Length: 143
Image (cartoon, rainbow, N blue to C red; front, side, top):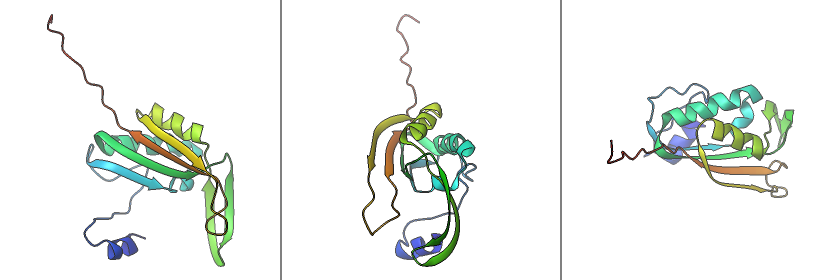
């Protein structure tokens, strides 16, 4: 996927990584886009991934997250006529929002939609826009 993305967008740097342990400096990114990647996490890893996202984002950086909505885990051995070995975890919007909030994000927007028929995997979709807000402290003139 990284090779294909690089071919299509040669001016953008793409790297492969692990969502629960990103190999980059803190406050290094202005935004993170995570489309349908959290399906590869176990439920217990969701908070670690969100905390790691917050660590690498700059103050006021954005995280855009898309995911399959549900409360189950599934296994697929076939996808669109191809043999696969895919375990996937679905999350509720409330679950993802709670983990983002716990990790220190502010939720800007959240939405869900039904799948497009005959075009994509038939699960409900969730989308969340979150911001790494950093508290600002105003010093009192009395101090």
